[in-house]
Length: 119
Figure 1 (cartoon, rainbow, N blue to C red):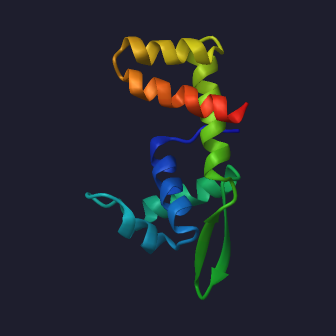
Figure 2 (tube, rainbow, N blue to C red; figure 1 turned 90 degrees about the vertical axis):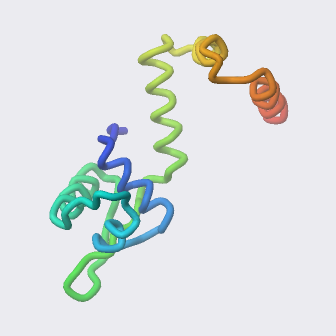
């Protein structure tokens, strides 16, 4: 699966939350300073070309909706990060965050409980 740019991902996050939206609605949900209409429209068309969104005609405009699930993109992105930065080892990734103190012992224990539930 193709990776998204920061701008593309911002728009996808909005579409995943809203389920569908036109360009004006997407812009409303974006942080200040708001991008130009043409910028968001262009990025949305790029997302369509990449296979992340589709649209239906409504009046003179388009209503965009995601065709890639957020969970699928998240999973693929995490796998890519683990492969690219941690030699494919989730253990190395978790160890990295624990060593950087970005993860508490309680959080690590919660993760272990979740893993054990899945077994």
